[in-house]
Image 1 (cartoon, rainbow, N blue to C red):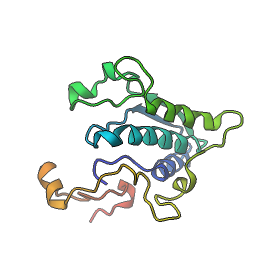
Image 2: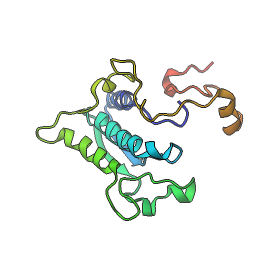
Image 3: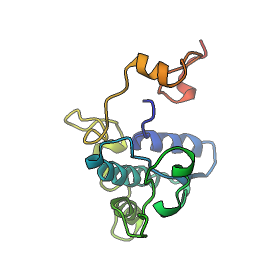
Length: 173
């Protein structure tokens, strides 16, 4: 959807698709902006996104590395370019945030004794769990109404406008 993070299965499928071409895949300049969520959900969402995206990527042999767009919220580019946010894994005082532990736990899935993709359960293969809950259901906010999006996005229009599927799955018509 619009302005939403990719799900673990989307990340895994995209990395696999590119890997099938014989290419290595890196995730670069990762940060997780959450200031638009209610304050009580921000840390939960950020930790899950960091963990699940990295854990999903690590399941693919073509995945080659990850780089963050900084490490501390004290020096984030987001506040200077978009709006006030805290998208990184260390806070303004260089303290570890919940997102740090999410990333650490994801990286530990490839350590001795770890289980690659650990903690993702059904979300590695599907966007829904066995109870029908969509990935991120504990913090994900409802999609904006179509007319709200068209106004905030400057009108929309054009081929594939509003289509959240990857471009290679969209038709040109």
